[in-house]
Image 1 (tube, rainbow, N blue to C red):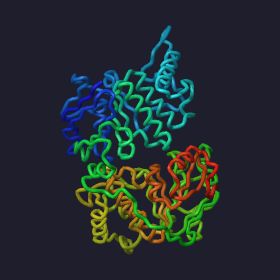
Image 2: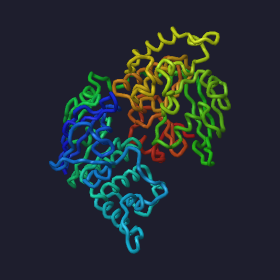
Image 3: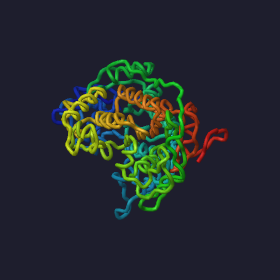
Image 4: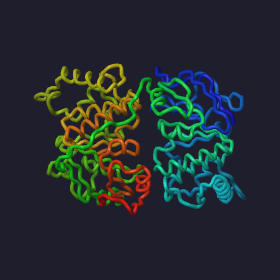
Length: 507
């Protein structure tokens, strides 16, 4: 199936998310749609999939203009979407998930589950997916769950497949397997749109690359283009992709965690006896697939978890049992993984958000009175320093793009006098140019003698920033290894396997 988009424009009020975008995807082609977070990639694909209606432009399949009123029309026309966040029911089997929304019935209107099982087996064998149709989805590894999403699309005879940031929750090995699956689908004549911001993956699998910046197509590139060339197209200027840092100047152990255990409200152990320490002037990065205890670990440190045992000591003083404000006042800077839930108040201005964790202290509050001039001067400085793209400091943070919201959070936390920085997904939703800046700030924080705990699902980020790497799997430490440990070994550890020749501490 050939896809052609002609002059697609999509507006949300005064914001032009897609501005006269045109591109063509041929059968048997992997076409990468590359751009920063917020560039308009997913909006464009939601228009294609019928979730949004374009304000201008046309969608053509095999040279015929299409008019989709919803996803059902797009699926009926042969378009399948593999979403970044899986659209699966965990307590259903693979076969039940595949037939959901496309149920076939037998005698007296009963569901024909046997037909769904047969369809799963047929597709699985054709592409070597090795998926059991009777397995419960909640029992499957993340990489296999993604194959179920692909089978769902193929079961409806999709000839055009859209992969929306498909590697966000995969280990390196699972990512390699997905790349191979995409190649198999291409060989079978499927047209594939691959939405991503990861340069390594684009160059590994794409036949053609279209780069989008600020809602517009800014150019096309071949897979032979260098990372630097692609990054420059995405950002609009040359970008330094390598994190430059010297060897750490290690001081004493400032932050020590012992036997940390976190249990959720249902009694499930989320963090299972973790122990580690970080020295002054060191970055310890936590690697692992999302959902293996990273969130609970950082929240326990900040006092955001209720059922926690063990010990968390900063400068020799116990943090467990303290309130969040007391933890912050002890010198802990926190970049949360979900900026909208935990990092910002959306209806407050940029200036107000920049003083959230200092609303009782100098220089912004004196004798109970807000020092407006000092706050505005500080906010204006940070707006420029961190390249927060907003009309002014009085703009509500809820009206900013995700990347600009993240910059506000980072600016607030790195502008404080810190004794420990906890950075969870510090560059999630941030453009390549700002990633460069934030990484430099993290290294500068480390070089100033502050211990840094970085939690990231981006393995490139972990390797770039870490002096040591702690790998988590199902709430436990698989191992703590040097920062220059090969990606292949880290990927293996992320599956819970500890290599026999692993050297390093294990909790």
